[in-house]
Image (cartoon, rainbow, N blue to C red):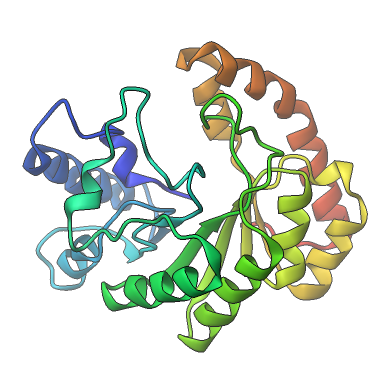
Length: 248
């Protein structure tokens, strides 16, 4: 679960070209560290994958999702408190990840495939680092929207991965047949979900390192959220392993 684009989160403090070179260095460092395949969890355009494949830069095999699909106000709607929108929104290789309703979502999935996405990432909840008022258990998409996304991705022969921390949004993506769930910190609060994940062959990607990062240098509301979910995240991982869920 890697986010190379977060090397410079908002890309407003330095030229995009410098950020690209830093990202290339991080990709090379991943290979040096022993990783042979990396699935980027949103933000890396397919050009980096092409660069590795063509030998322009050294790196592990890359699987890109390009953007995080979410509704207005979701984690893919990357707007700073100042109102600044992430520079990706002006880049044709980075379609805006915001879509509302089944029709818009299907169209966005097709566009992401067109620009080179290997996997389709979407979000059904907020996260620890989301804006105040959109927390880890707050729902993002509705069932009809999630169903449309998963169906469209499958029709395009693409794997799906979902950001879901807890609450109804976590159950929604699992029941829809997502390929893998990232975070799933509050899985332990909905015990039968682990069995459903095992039965549907849904992978679980725990993200302890993310929360260790957020627990020290983030905004106060993010630090508080992180403290609340760390223990149950461990309990959820134990429950998943016991139920036979595959962990990535």
